[in-house]
Amino acid sequence: MARHSGGRGWYGKVVGAALGVTMLAVGASVWTAQADSVGGPSPKASASPAPGGAVKPVGTSIAHASDAGPRGVNITIDDGPDPAWTPQVLDLLAEYEVKATFCVTGTQAAAHPDLVKDVVAAGHRLCDHSVSHDTGMDGKSEAYQSKEILDAEKMIIKASGGVRPMYYRAPGGAFTPYSRELAASHGMRPLGWNVDTKDFERPGTDAIVETVQRELANGPTLLFHDAGGDRSQTVEALRRVLPWLAEQGYSFGFPVR
Ligand SMILES: [Zn+2]
Image 1: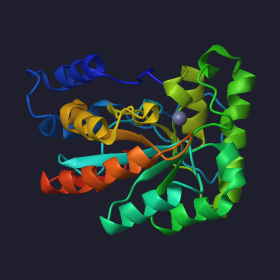
Image 2 (image 1 turned 180 degrees about the vertical axis):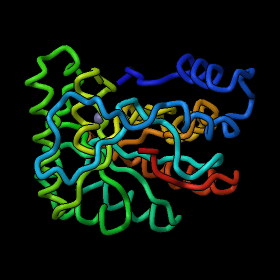
Image 3 (image 1 turned 60 degrees about the vertical axis):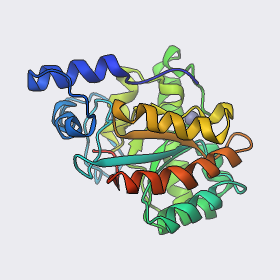
């Protein structure tokens, strides 16, 4: 789970190159610049477009910025939906009036379509997290990558009752140029993260909260999980992190597309 799609090195380089300034100590003040520097929609995506032609291609670069402005953060919840944990996460998000992005696998979406519909009905966004969560898919054939991404897209759309995933997050961050272009041509912006809470490893609620507080300057996209095992620490951490973020003056948004 350690694979990272965009750490400090990337962040500092892009911001520095875009602005020609020294890296600022306060991460929030550079997040808006990040939105402009990650690249716009690419008209050159070579992958086949989505059937029907109704989907507008989006940028092919890996998005990290928030659409909620310079004090915006993106809560992203991966690997579900799961009947034990997703409802608890949804309750907390509702309690704190937070909209989040759920990166669901095709397998989980197909198994729990009612939960996918609950996610959508609450105003959250869907993200394609592949069919089977193969973190080695960047070493597999294009045919394999295509099947994992597009089959999941179909499974998610079916489970949601027709709502399309707006992002694609490669399992473990295992993107390839091909998978990014394919996803983007289907209207799914490749989605990275800035803060890996490591909640998947169950380090304890305190550790999850402290990771958010310590690493938030990395950028606005936070990674949590609502499936794959006992996620009670994640639920408890969100119960502390969401009000803390609000107290710090952050607002909750979606990743840019
Ligand atoms: Zn995942």
